[in-house]
Length: 246
Image 1: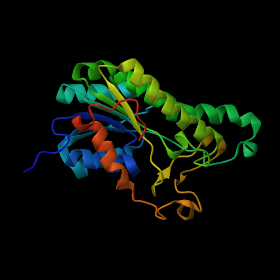
Image 2: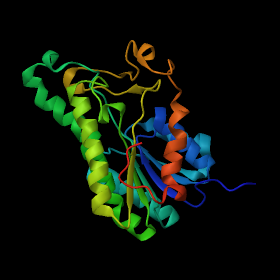
Image 3: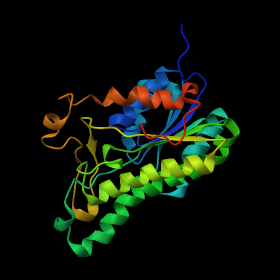
């Protein structure tokens, strides 16, 4: 049987209960990795039913230091090492324009979104840092089309994903030469993202109305379309890459 791209790798992956995260975790296991799958949703526990002992589900809040430490410690306690941290947890602002957000609710909406989309990956990278130095490992953060472009969300979401691009670049500089830091900026995928409770939002489709018509390939890909690039960045084949948002 051929070896997988990630044989022997131990990975902590936040935001893994559904969508792109769940798909990538499934691919990681197929490639030989062992994964601590962390998510605030108890639905993450079903991954063990599907993928077996190669996955340890951890229900926790990526916005907290304790939640990230628990995920890292789960990996170290079970497998004695950590090679990859993937910060994938994220929520959306539902692409609501700034003018439609009541001014008195804006601070709470900002705090909620930036805690998930920006603070959470910072906490995760910090919690994983010492173990990644030991393994000369890698950090992967999930950005977005909105990391470099407008109209991928509202002002809050776009600002947060631009911030993730900044984290990739700055942490690649700070963590070098021991730890590589890269990002994946998915275009569109048929998944659902949590909205802002501060604005009374519920989950919404990540694919905005009219998206298919403006895409060059005129196609909305499946959630598994990004598995390959996440796998590449977690593998030794990407050993010369750092500071890149793909």
